[in-house]
Image 1 (cartoon, rainbow, N blue to C red):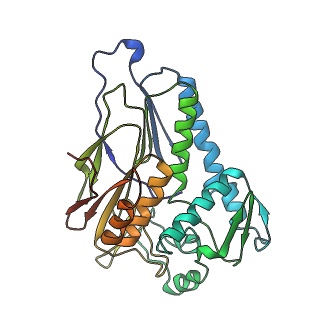
Image 2: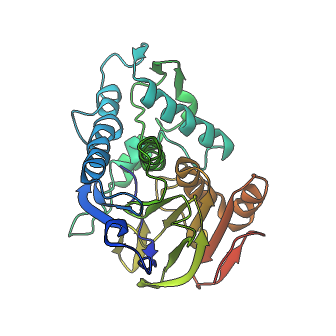
Length: 322
């Protein structure tokens, strides 16, 4: 799954609540991260448990590393240059990934899988991938190699691998919100390892979300107050390694196979949909400050915060911060 985001949550308990209205929270390790879900207007542990069951379900669809997942199976099918039948949900996310790949003109590309699989940012020992392997793998990276329509997919290049790490968590968060609302939970906080989705207005109080300081990652550099929206950050500090005094991070350039080095440290997107925010945070990072800001400004009801490697902050016009 995609990168582990690390927004710092700054929220207080509701004052004056009756005992049966106190928030309930559950945390578990899934989706390759710590998932936390808080309900503010429900005390149903069954609903919380069902949310984590949904996370497990989607992990078995979108994971690039779980050999039992649907995505892994289609990526490694020996006959993938012929049409394969896939689930509606996988088709939906792949098509959205292709849309954002096209929107960015390839600076973001969901077919980065053959390259991203060469990098191991979790290893205790920092080792760069073999340069020759990176160059060879780049030959298979091109979102135009994928044809995906209703429940069918075809790979034009047998070596192409899809990686939905930059979009799948957002889709899952949106589905969790949908489930909660269907079950009369109208105020909740969903945190998929830093992909934050706020349901409702937290009993009119609103949610104050801290945005990580890239240079002091245990602190917030600013905060934003939102209602019923998503906050997603892509940052160079989230998964990285240092080799020969150079820092390499997980946001890879599909044209070079190496980390983007464009002066940005993080991009935070506030949007109605978590999938939109998830994709746009990486798209805007890949485009760089000027083009990323221009793209965000062209979209309805989407705001962004860009932090460069000197900790200078740039906001889009209506980004609410404190």
